[in-house]
Structures are given as structure tokens and as C-alpha cells.
Amino acid sequence: MKKPSYSVVIVIDRLDRPIGALPALQKMGAGERTREIFVCVGKNPSNQRNAGVKSCSTPLVYFLDDDSQVAEGTVTDLLSHFEDRRTAVAGGPNLVPPDAISFEKTVNAVLASWMGSFSVRFRYASIGSVKEATEKDLILCNMMVRRDTFLSEGGFRTDLYPNEENEFLNRLLHKGFRLVYDPRGAVFRSRRKSLGAFCWQAFRYGRGRARQMKVYPCLSDIIHLAPLFFVLYLLSLPLPWVVTVGPAWQPFLSLLKSLGWIPLALFLLGAVGTGISAASYHRRFMDAFKVPILIFLRHSLYGLGLSAGFFTSIPQPPLEVQVYKVQKGGNKFKFISVRAGKK
Image 1 (tube, rainbow, N blue to C red):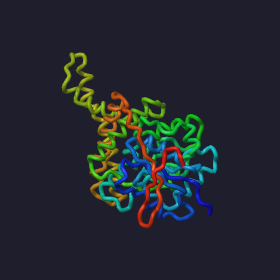
Image 2 (cartoon, rainbow, N blue to C red; image 1 turned 60 degrees about the horizontal axis):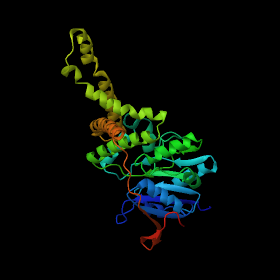
Image 3 (cartoon, rainbow, N blue to C red; image 1 turned 90 degrees about the horizontal axis):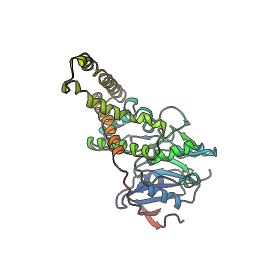
Image 4 (spheres, rainbow, N blue to C red; image 1 turned 180 degrees about the vertical axis):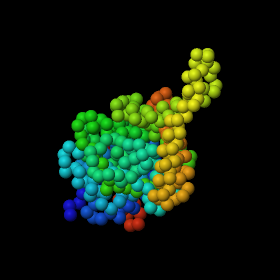
């Protein structure tokens, strides 16, 4: 079988910690093994990936996070979609590892559910069949791109992180390129291991989405405003008890007191139902209680993150990046420094 002509780009903030993706890549069969691997070190993941792509010599580039564990057959499935010249990007879900701790599996049950993630749940579970995708289906920790298209379209915005891939994918879609979601093309990747980390991730993703909408607004982004309206709705619930109105408005105020809680009750009913379903399917009894709480926190903190993103400026992170080409040396990996954009 002809060796796949693709390179791997991984970003990391420092080189003195383990890169879990590397051993998994080395274990791949000869028919799927990458031609070259670049690790890009810095504090600006978008710019790091841009620099990594410039250093590649292959027509296809596979973006992985440092802890992405590529599943057997994933590369073959993703590569097959580039036989169509219109295909610019192909990707699949990132799944929770089988040996993950209990909290990670509970988090994954939230992320992969409709109540927890709505349309973006495809990123966290192998759902459905191969389809033409949007930015809501694909995720950067498991995404293969056509190198010439990536470079000609300017790559990722260096002032966006996270959500840099969402803005990039929207640009491609609006220019007529084809994006593909393949549920078979999966990687395994750990989830947040603590409640604090989960909450911070939800807030950061909401803030990133707001920043993305500020620089490249799309009509399809309207659905992502739902958590912000949810937060505003929660804040409005106590108002009937703290505001004073005239007699003419008393009937309306009484109606608001009695009916204003119905949307929250329906939301909690859906969250509890998701928890019961997750507990039954995964045989983890406590998920019936944990999942609804995490769903509530995810949407609330995402909404707060949206608010923060809309009303704060977009920072410009540092652009310094060092690109290393990875070579296997015995039982260790060697990192050979290269100039970004040079082979």
C-alpha cells in the first residue's frame, strides 16, 4: 500500500512535558504512518499551527492535539475523502478513552448529548454516517486539511483562540469548499478531570465563540446565543419579587410569578431525562444526578463566557513560535529545530 502523503502538526506550550500523541502515531501501521511530524512550541496555538503547516512538505496536514490518540483506521478513512478535489477538510469525533476516570466519562456523557451540546455533539461521539459538514461538526484536535487551500486562505486568525478553526471553516464554506465529517475517523482524547476545569472550559468556549462572532459573524451562529439568553432569563426570575409596580400591572406580575418558572422546569426536565438515560446506558448510577448539574453549569457558564467575549476586547497573544521536526531515536523522540516555513 502506498504510504499516505500527509504530515502531522501538534502544538504545545513547552517541550519539557510528555506529548501523548507521539507514541500513538509511532504505533500506526506502515500503510497509515505519517511522513513527518512537527511540534510547534509557543503561546499562540493559531500562529503555531500556521507555522507548522508552512514547514510541511506534503499536500495534506493532520492537526492533532498533544494528547490525541489516533484510532486504527482513522487516517485511511480521512484520506479517502480527499479523492474529491473539492474537499478541503475532513475530520471526525474525539472520543473519551476507555481507561478514563469516572468524572471524564460523565463529562463525555454531557458533551455527547443533545441537551449538553445541541448540534455540536457530533464532535464528541460517533454519530450517524459520513456527511458534508459545517464548523459545528468538526474539531481541531482531529482535523485533516489540504495544505494548499489552508495557505491560500490565510490559515487561522492569530488573534483567535479557541474557535480559530470555526472561523476558518466558515470562511471555507462560504467560498464553496467541501468539509467532511466521518464518524469512523476518531481519536481518543481525555476530558476535563475536575469540576473547576470543566467550568473554566465552558466559560472559555463561550468567550471564544463571542470573539469569533465579532470578527466573522454568521447567521448560523444565532443558535450559540441560546446560553446567553438562558443566563438573562435566570437573572430575570427574581424580578417579580423585587420590583414595585402600579395596580394596573399587578395581574401581569402575578402571571409572571406563576408562569415564569415553566421554561426552567422544562429545561431541568430535559437535563434530568438526559442524566437518567446516560446512567442507564453507561451503567453509572450517579450520572443520573451529575449529568443534569453539569448540563446546567455548561450552559450557564457558556452564556457568561459569551457576555465576557462580547464586552471585552480581543487580546493579541505573542507570535513567537519554534517549530521542531520529530524523529524517533531509539526509545526516545528527538526534536530537531527548523525555521518556520522552511523544509
